[in-house]
Image (cartoon, rainbow, N blue to C red):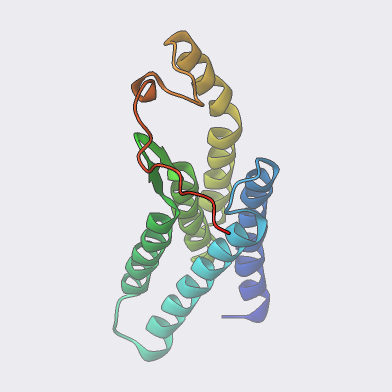
Length: 164
């Protein structure tokens, strides 16, 4: 692959990952600018390597590495999900990492339109949907800080006594 094409694919993946990372950073989420940039860049690089291995050595299937990207990101996403009582946190962070890897893969394979449209759709979901979600939760009488299912429930783990 020509160096110019390599820079275009990896640069686009990094820029698109950054745009998602900036949104996450502004909302003070744990996976922010660097994490999302690296997820997109790494996915793009693995995709480029996969296609180059198939081209140079013949045979083989470039989709095998793509499948491993999905598995690896799933593992990272699983680590981002936390449960506290009946509350689950980190699902959007995990889903963002997952879709960000797909964006990086699209850029890495040279499908720039899919990468850019995927990024645009992801940003719409992350920016536009939270206020709509909050509206419907208020309409249903659900307080995001303390859902009705948690009211009156004893804490899962009692606080530890102070240490000396």
